[in-house]
Image (tube, rainbow, N blue to C red; front, side):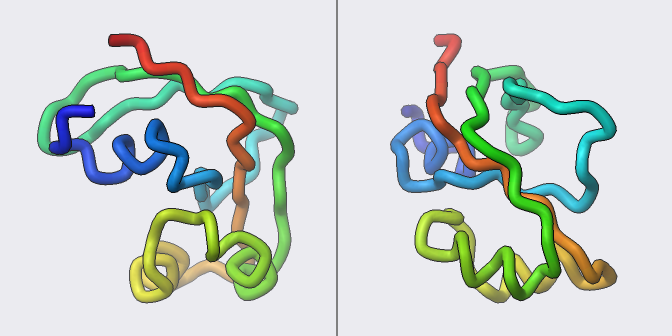
Length: 97
């Protein structure tokens, strides 16, 4: 990786095994398109999803933090006004370039 896409690099290196979201998708999904929002806005790959975890945010953190790729401080900030969290477990990450 080129080292400028902080979380994208962690996904494709295998360090980050969960993609966090605030809302559960209405329909079952098996693929997520990876878009790097900063510093360069670009679609960089896709993720094949193994399973979806949805529960209280403290429970999701306890199940995923070892392979979540973010700190507890960033996790808490992201879910600041939420009671529940979604974690998509990544089965396979496919880099487009």
